[in-house]
Every structure is written in C-alpha cells, then in structure tokens.
Amino acid sequence: MIYVLAAIGALTIVVLMWKAFGPQGTGEARGRPRQAPIAPDDDPDFLRRISEQQRKQRRGEDD
Image (tube, rainbow, N blue to C red):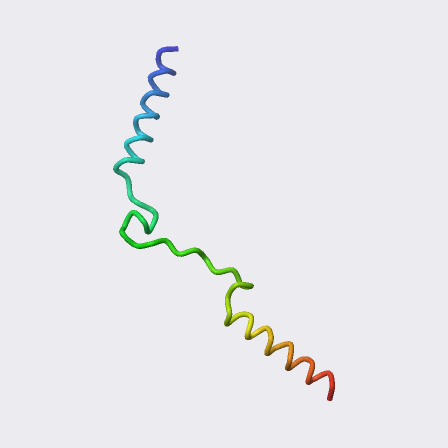
C-alpha cells in the first residue's frame, strides 16, 4: 500500500514540475497573442469564392 501512495505522490510531483517548468505550448506564454481560428463562414475570401462559384453555375444553367 505504501508503494502505491509513493507512486501517486511521485506522479503528482512530476506533473506539477512539468506544468511549472516544461515546454510552453501556447503563444501567450511566448509573448504572442493567441489568434482564434477563422471558420469558413466567417472568412470573407471564402464567402466571395462561394458566391462567385454560385453565380458561374447559375450562368451555366441558363445557357
């Protein structure tokens, strides 16, 4: 039983040390602001391309 408690304690210490001193994964930690990803329906270039494709398809069907 004492070995199980020691293993849990050691793992806890390792995780805390990793969180405190391990590599920083986010841009905020490196001094850069984190940018939110742009969804396709929020991207003006994507919406413009879709609109142009729809107009071309309508013109092709009318001919």
